[in-house]
Length: 331
Image 1 (cartoon, rainbow, N blue to C red):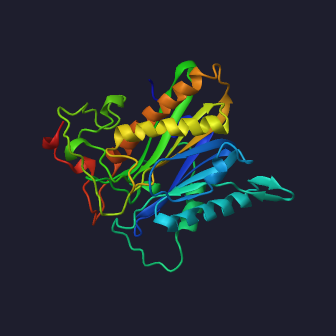
Image 2: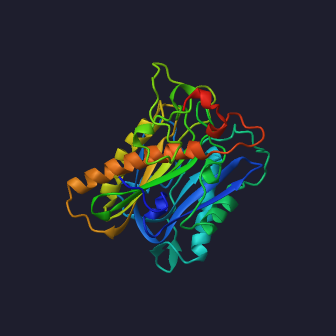
Image 3: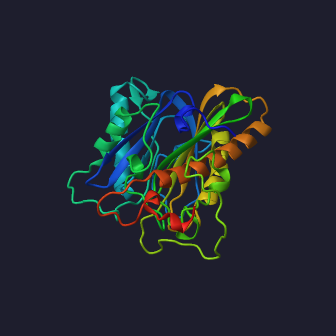
């Protein structure tokens, strides 16, 4: 497996990602979009999801393509970020054509970051403006760690963050992942520096420490803190139907389980969107989707570790960053 030139989801040609955050709020929004609508599916495995417009992504629904996807902090308040994205897309005359009207299709998912130390005393929701700003910032390059939807993220033992990774598969097909890591579980083994995702690391993209020497029977969680949910997008340039995107999203959840322990708990809203730009034809309708699912899972595991690895410290943080851990904890 070879990462793409950026090692970001935007190695899938045509995709753009933008971040916007409010550091006083300790929350933010990440938007994925493209110059043209793209096919999308979704799979939700967590027990406490917060979503908007995900029902229309089912394979039997009428609308198969979307204009943008939104990942947001703010718990249910963050769903309003999609309003800002829709408004900006409407101004660009983007959206599903209904007579003389254009209705932008913008599914969204949120995570709970209200306990991350931010000031939430606002009377007017900041999330529509953050959504519009994230869309305006969309480009091929974007930051990781404490930015966008990753701004207020935490795991059981460390700050979380925004992560991304990519891979070039057989035949030149590209797969990428984008994730806001805000898990009830832990991304590292036993509270140390070794990542659960270590077997899938490419080079030293998240520290290069390799697997842990031992693996404890007990796992660490932030049970009772109610500030959970990891939300992600996987993408490919392979031409997939909405049903095939749904299967790729389902397979990608394996990557979440490889990188976060435990995953998909009743207190997480773990969700994966899957995107196809359709630029490359699928040569084998059986083996190609299977390989795409494997690549999506591996990219997502790497992206999760990269998001935690890239988190930076801020005053008043409830948890340390990976970079702030003592080397004596491993590696």
